[in-house]
Length: 595
Image (cartoon, rainbow, N blue to C red):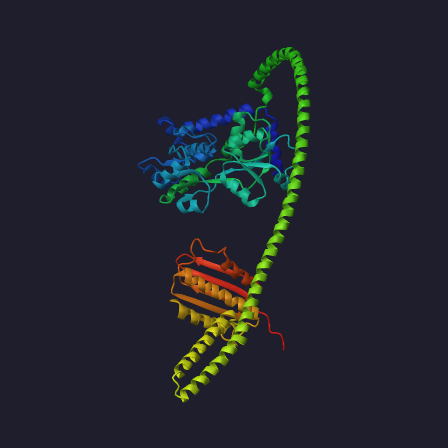
């Protein structure tokens, strides 16, 4: 491969003396080939003298056709944009088809499609008998009968001829590589060398022009297309730096319902000699350019440029004097403007420094105010917690006083009243009924006092603790309101810290009161769960939820949240309009102290 690359690059640099004669003979051969395809009867008689490459049954099959065979070209592979006229097609495969028609003594009817989409439409309609060139893959083999590959087009790497050294993989990773519109090689590069920096281009000609002016560093292109565009556009500063990927191999494809047609095409391709194939390859698979300094257009432009240069030289001399004067005036104006700009920048810097100083002072003041506000908020929270603590302690003191003093005194008075009632009744005194009534009223007062004490000290006085107090609260709520209040608790669920139990009870009281006042439902459920000195109290109702103007920020709910914090947890309130309200309070209990 190295020797072939050296040969191709040598063709880029110089032009052999026999080039004109060789090209003349090549075109003469192609012209005779194309002319032989459309030969008249006299020429046809001459062709019959040549040995037939087909078997008798194959020739008989061709002669028995009632229509010409339709042949389709792939418009995507032509260097020129194909037109509706089949004669406008130019490419290596068209020359092969012309030579094949001469060998087989037949005339194909070109499809004349202007795009690959039109070819596919005709293919689906069953209007195509032969494809001039088709790559062999699973899709093609499923729909067509393919000959042996007759056309191999190498894919080369083109670079500027000023590039020094050989191309290595590491060196190519840092270069911009453009890939032509032949999608197969692009997919091959992306899958085999994903680290390459591929630059998309619209057409192969755009890629060659971008490469020649340095917009890209490497162009991946098939050799036939590169040869055509380089010669036509006289691009002289490119060279072949290597090959990449497998060469494009093409076969002729025939319809599956005509298996004999595939054999006919194969025999025609096999009859093409090595010399004929070499002449076609030399026409389409080479990179020879006319040196730019030998072209007429080059010397025309040299003359024009020389004349323009002389005129410009004179103009420059005159213009130079005018520019010197203008430059002096402009320099003076710029000096004055620069001085003014420096003064303005100095004032701006001074103002910026003052602004930064004021911002720093204001930031310091805001930080101090923020710290003061934080202290005030902490002190306020501490004061509110102290109020709750004092309120709870005062409730306990009043409860103990009522229980220990007033309760016992009322109990004593009740005993005395019952004793007096019995004595009066034994003496048949008329006031015995009044004494009995007094005793009953005192007993009712004792019961009422116990109810008050239970409200003031809901947990500590009762032996069963928080569970019993919440159950009693649920029963009393059901009795005094129209709502059914239910208490659920997995037994046993003790809460040892009396302060925690009292705060939880007050939270339940406030939540039940809010449900009765705002909920409008018919049921309340109170749940208590305690596990490993931690638990959760939950109060749920099926009412309409808190109103839009609730007192969430008021004293009631705010006190509930403080009590939740005093229980070592937090309190959350979920209220959905029409779906009720749920109050959840997590808490932390404390183990009882021994003794």
